Length: 149
Ligand code: 4NP
Image (cartoon, protein in one colour):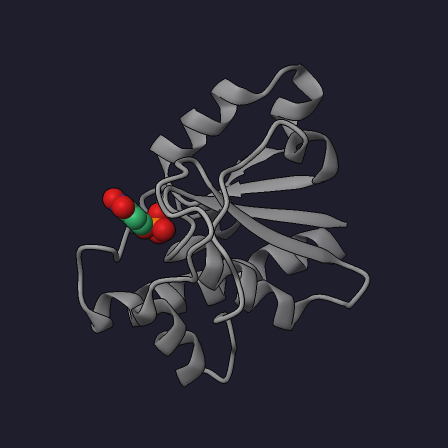
């Protein structure tokens, strides 16, 4: 099973989602992350994301930002998008129905129809990053249970 987590910049939410998901799934799983923009390409995750993950004993410092590519739609089985803008952008890049079917809103795994987005902590503070971590942790548990059941 190959899982791709996608956000806008690939420096805050999706690196955290990648780091958290890797702690929950068997080693046979491949988990990666990407952004819809290439503004931060090659950069390590935001320092606040690195610190928040480290507070939970997860090291995301070696990740590097990259934009989503055409081949990702063939490589990955599931592509989880952090918010609706990201989802719509990713859907617009899908080239056929099979690729389209792989794209999901990350929060849909939680079945909560009011909270459909992982809020972007980029303009926020450490509390926002911790809140996002908790949300991603819940979502990753739900995704793991869906995939393994
Ligand atoms: P992310 O957060 O999509 O969770 O990585 C952001 C990162 C960068 C920017 C916005 C959001 N930016 O405007 O550069």
